Length: 447
Image (cartoon, rainbow, N blue to C red):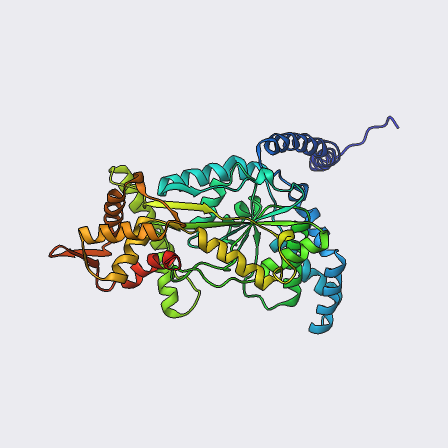
């Protein structure tokens, strides 16, 4: 036992490395993980004390645990068996497909990434690009049943919607978004997943994939996770509100029913004086397809132009971005006939439509397209008359001054060459009717 053993230096170094790895994996790493886990739990406890809707334990589960819980669910197991029979593959192959789908969908929420980075970034980006206004806010989530699942339902005008609502809901809860394939780009996907968003394939025809997605949404709903959903299913191509899709909403209702948990739908309506993607969306509409062609060179050129304007002191924000909260809809208060996915989605869209904020640019665009060329004083009179007919709508008047609101709206339209003035007559620029209509359509339903 006391005899010496001679080893080559490389063997001795290799033994030390194996010993170090073993010590770290069995003693050091568990202690470090426990230390950071305790710190995270204390931080989340402090966060929950100031949030209207605390972060649910389900959202804080380890991502691997959530994936395991999902793929071993009895309904998913049966779906795997059915998929194997239908596709003529072994069950272990079908199981790996289901696991791959689960890995693609399930987020890895980080409280630090959401509240330490995302909220600050959302605030900076929102206030740098727009004059952000909360037009109507009468919903208090603190008064909602703490056992109910809260779902924010919103119209989808721009990709800025995610940023804007994340910023404005910072003191309410951590939102869980459903995001499309556009966000599955590294490293953006890592950040979005850390913020609690889950990825969906909007046009998938795969029954197994849809079952895995449905089960995840049902589990999140049953666990009380606060969610944010766009009922329209995608960006509006012409600026108007689109017909609702019932897919995600159906999964939410099934999850609530299975968990015997109430759901409160909170309508949120957004509108902008300028939508960053407006011309891209109109081109997609003209082609009759939802494929948005924006070259990376165009994006970088736009970013460099804004940086140059900031350096030279010529930059100013893209007008107003307004958000309005509508009347909440509680599932338990809806009759059985009105609680079907189709009926419920229609009722939600009606409440969103009623809450859409009216801004200067959309209103002036609507008046000029409806009435044709107008003199400045006639436009101001028409603007004032419209405000009277919109008394029940959520209207934002800059500086609470109607004359300034008209001037502000016209200035924004002139900068984009959407209006011209000839012989005292103000009119929409020839060839720009579709772009002006994009903004007018956002409030057309209110008249």
